[in-house]
Length: 265
Image 1 (cartoon, rainbow, N blue to C red):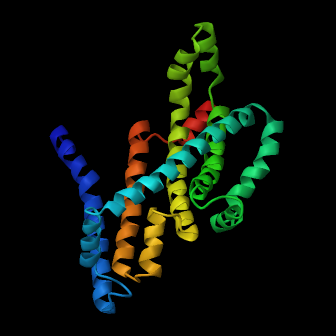
Image 2: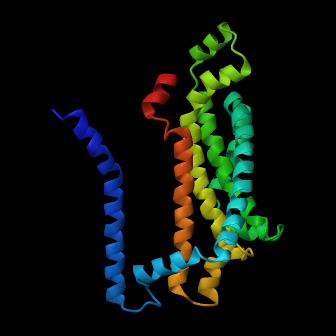
Image 3: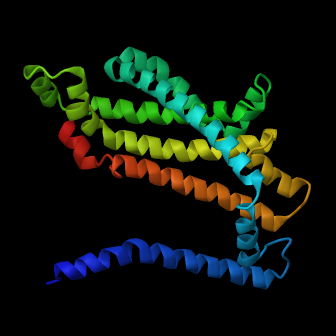
């Protein structure tokens, strides 16, 4: 039988040790591949990329680009969540409304991001386009996940809330939020990651000034600095990991399970 102390010491090792070993393993593969290629212009070494990455933290351009890109993400993400919620509630309550909205959401999901960028670029300025594309990516994910959660609500709990005359705030706090948080957590985590990638892709294609996407494009187009290109890309990846971690922390990493959905059906 494993003691409680052993379990307590194993969990941090499994939780933090294995990811660190995995990262080190793939960095080793990268270093070996760069050594075999032997051409930094084609595949830079991890040492040169991390050196450029750390040098970026001492530049003003990094923080201005981060601010610009995160602001575009925040505006598009917040607007997309609000619109997704506004569409999800009537979709869960009305089959007619759901049948009208579903084709539009399917089209948004099926259309390549690059097509949306090119079409929207005709009508929108390249400074606001990244936020708009992020909004389009977020809406269908929030809509479908929240609508599913609303349909899976337990009617018995709703009756309990009515019998005990819960107010709106108490109903949300004790009934709706605990029941819907797994669906919201999954939707927000997925849509935030997708929205962030769509934001950066838009910035690259339309060359949004003073943004992370522009810096990536600049490293490739003018300077042809592959090491710096990798460094800017790592910044994007690190921000994505941080944002995903914040969502998981806020919702306690709860996800809707098949068993939970069956119990509420």
